[in-house]
Image (cartoon, rainbow, N blue to C red):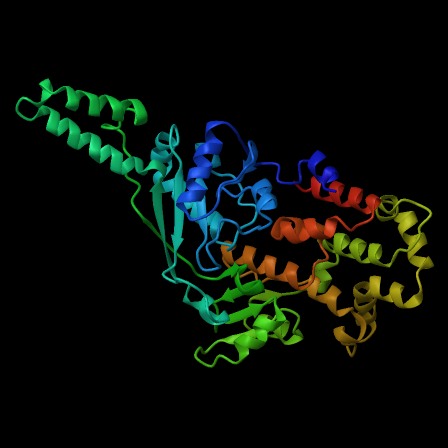
Length: 412
């Protein structure tokens, strides 16, 4: 199903192949973290050690999690440095991995020559009980554990050497044997730097896949929590312990609040001249096209064909596709027109963007939220929520897929 994307290098193209000895080390990590081994002989991993093939085998995309509050990572190769995290449990997972390699990169390179590292992301929450428990995320401690307890074995080797050098122990054959056995099994660890001290990572605003997907926006006027799941949203509203604003992602009031708090903004006159508007309009058009004589890719790429098919649409659909331009035209003659009366709601929502005053890291998070509120720009959809994009891509018309691939390819 994803062949078209794979051929265009748009489907998890930066995964690292794992085989041979590395599979054995990966399995040791899985067992150490409390999971079961994979039976696969070869697979691929991303920057945090997640594998799509292992996820498929285990029928669990979150197989590196011990419950929603306890995610983990696995490092088996220095090649994971700078690689994407394809299915982050939190939006800050990529930043955590950058941080890990920035501080411990040289040691990781040395250790992964013959060992694997298990990562434990501890936010001091053993388990989630209520949806607003996500507000407890604050400082995350990243703990490192080596398979085969290599760091402990290094200590044992150092003790053996100390003992060996004490009085006449160097004559002892048993002593010789112990040292040889340890060196044969684990190599000479005496001068290896195996100490990966724990790291602290502080979170601010973020998205987590816990509770069906939750946005926590806490760097603004007032903390706003946005739920993607209706049942968890209803549950959260009952919780009166926190002074926060709670919304479901499909509530129209959410957009009002985000505008009021200067988290998002819009300028239709500017937006209508952009490539982004062009992509959104064409996506809208695609949704109204039924049984066409020409391939959809041609209709969306050729202005003459586009106009021809636009005129073939029923009046209601035509007004919807062209609603932004119609509104701006009417505005030139009179300012008594309201956006809501003419512009389609979802189209209007899709034309918002993060407020220009936002820091870059917050802009990315708000783009993701906007893409989830109204997914109409295929490029930003691909950039900010790949998994959701992939899920929808599968159901699209083949010719439309070609247009989407070309559109994304032209912007990378």
